[in-house]
Amino acid sequence: MATDLNAPLGQNRKERPARKRDLGRVLRYCGLGLGALAVIGISAWSALSPGHQTRSPAMPAATESALATEPAPPSEGQSNGPGALHRSGALSGAHVEEVLTDDGATVRKYTPRSRETGGPALIDVEPTRGQDPRMAALPNESLLEDRPEGRLPVIGPDGLRPMEQYARPWSGARGTRIAIVVGGLGLNQTGTQRAIRDLPPEVTLAFAAAGNSLQRWMQEARRDGHEILLQVPMEPFDYATNDPGPHALRVSSDAGKNLAELHRSMGQITNYTGVMNYLGGRFLSNADALEPVMRDLGKRGLLFLDDGTSAQSLSGTLAGAFDVPHGFADLVLDGELSRNAVLRRLDELERIARRNGTAIGVASAFDESVAAIAEWIEEAGGRGIEVVGVAALVKDPKQN
Image (cartoon, rainbow, N blue to C red; front, side):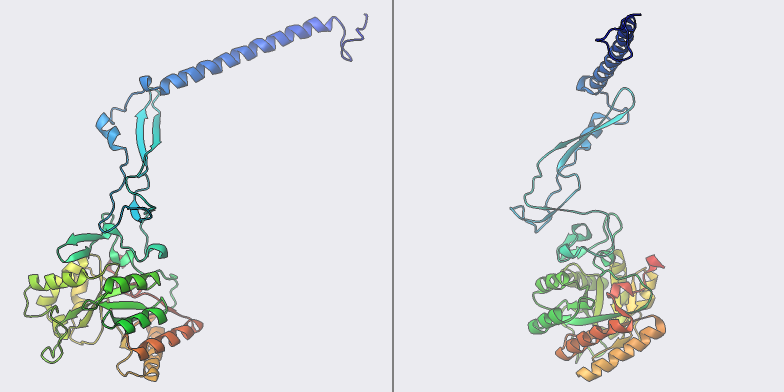
């Protein structure tokens, strides 16, 4: 057998025709495979082409058009101009269509569309307890209703309550916890500014409904991380000598009048977790007068904090009857107005909290109170005390 010197090593002339035949078979098989892939590609293109698509029997044309997500309209009071911030749905910039192909596959088509509103969009994700600090000064529009008295809090369509949305987040640890509420904000500009500036964000601030520039102060407090309450004036026992103001809730007024006054107070600000009484010993002890108010607070998803100054208060009984989150203050911290006296009361509040696990103290925005509370809180963390927003300590029927 002669050897071909030009053939690769180990290959003779008789082997070359056989190799050619093998190569031909491989090429034929490859050609068949490529052809099959081409047919599959054409079939897939045909199935997905507009002429070969069919709607699902359960998805008529009207349903398909409804899948297109329209841009969310701007909320009242929010601008559409450049740089304006507005809430928007997650798909508000997309047009979405769904079709069912012959083989039963669902094809979803997304095409971009322009939002009708300018500026950045604020997209809400799943509701959680507490608010993103970057937007804490902005109300959740789904938790508001427009009324003649103003924008009033309501429970959202998904069941989210204002008490949950605007609550200050806390660690979740079950150690010794204290809530401190400083009230009377808005009544004095200098005192309000000092309280917001000097008190740590763990302190809950209560704004008096009769105050001035409340919306501006509320936004500043929320940006600094404070949970806030609304103080509503109520009739005290010594009403003749101690007047809570012309819009106070009164025992002699009917339910409609008291609810109108309550809603007037509620409309002064937004972003609060609940209501706290200002005075009100007589009103809180009258079940007939208090019942409509508690019903309304429960329907709106707000908490009620009783400042604890009236031993005859029925707020706890009625709050339990109407599923209103409710709390009692354990101590008034500044009954005696001096730095040392307030510090002693804070130490007493700590002893109550160590005995019971939690405690709530209330004070007014006096200079001495603000200075003593700020000083005490700075040291409390080192003793294992966690200062939390008041919403974390109220008795919530939905959580028990």
